[in-house]
Amino acid sequence: MRSYGEYCSIAKALDVVGDRWTLLIIRELLIRGACRYTDLKNGLPGIATNLLSDRIRELEAAGLVQREDAPPPVATTLFHPTGAARELEPALRALGLWGVRFMTSRADGDEFRSQWFTYPVSFFLQDGDPDGPPVSIELQTASDPMVIEISGGEVHTRLGTATAPDLILRGEPQLILALLSAKLTVAEVTAHGLEISGDIGLLERVLAHDVAA
Amino acid sequence: MRSYGEYCSIAKALDVVGDRWTLLIIRELLIRGACRYTDLKNGLPGIATNLLSDRIRELEAAGLVQREDAPPPVATTLFHPTGAARELEPALRALGLWGVRFMTSRADGDEFRSQWFTYPVSFFLQDGDPDGPPVSIELQTASDPMVIEISGGEVHTRLGTATAPDLILRGEPQLILALLSAKLTVAEVTAHGLEISGDIGLLERVLAHDVAA
DNA sequence: CGGCATCCTCTTTGATACTG
DNA sequence: CAGTATCAAAGAGGATGCCG
Image (tube, rainbow over all chains, first blue to last red; front, side):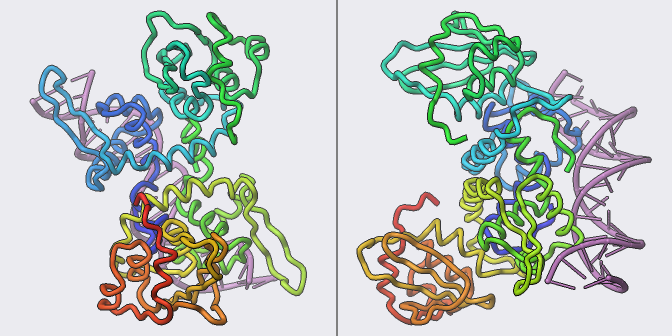
């Protein structure tokens, strides 16, 4: 990217991460941790492969990505986010929170990946009963399954399935999001086709009732 | 900007403000409030005038800017930031804080405008003595003069001069920044050419000693 | 298959000149 | 003051080829 040539910390930050796709690459690396090239490509639908390779190299040069030629059994290149990249998390969180306003409907053709639930979950869910038992919620969409684990006051997410989820939400991501953000009620999302099975009362424990969004 | 086509709030945010120059236009509007076209152009050195006019129109369409054809005596168009634009402030703050790491030296040819001090001042200064008397610090660089006003626990900045500043800092912005961020001492910045006059002890009151940057 | 590089087309940006 | 108009240069997108 061509520098803005401004002695301003916002402009300097954008000199490094303001290029198209760059912040989304950081998003994938922060959500998923070290990724293979193919993981990144899958998490960034629409990116041209030459652009991805260019951006990775630029991020390496800027010290935001570290490349590791992993030996067998991995036998592939892993791209790690560095500390400087992790320090961008507050900026990504702030942008993501601001962008929630555009998520009420899903544009035709918009791609979706389960891991993108990570930020919204962190915005909208909290453990309302830190002393309660550990519970898990499985999210099933057209993308990979994902699990929200609530335990001891902490809310975590990961790709994968739960062995015995306490609650399963199955359907369109925008319905799951409407439910988690309390924009729609259980009755409403069910009417729109979301399949809910398990301990519905669990939602009371995790829904944050004080989000400024 | 071409949409990323991803159902992710970060991608959606970048669909709106991810274009080159867009966040910097928001920066100017948030720092200065309603601006004339010429103010924006002056605060965005390097932008092509056709791009500025394009971006303003896009921001208007997105509901981040409101145009006002001010009647006399102003007799010019004013561009106001909307509430949605103001809600981007946390994102700009986070990016600006991250970008402070690139401010230790000033690249050759980097432009500077006094109002860009606003965010760094908010990062690094605080009123350590909320019950103390109101004081003001005037910053004099090659750009317009600027005033930091400390009073009742609050720190404010504005373009302009103070009638009787308690402290004047005059010299290169990177030296002022090094002083405010406590990267260099008074003795060091003075040795590098910063002219300091007035109540130096005042710095003790305002330097935040606990910034995570 | 994973990690690119090349080629080509199309879009966006930048620089400058000009206008009501 | 607040833009348009024009044109060259850079960047993005898409397809495909290559090599371990």
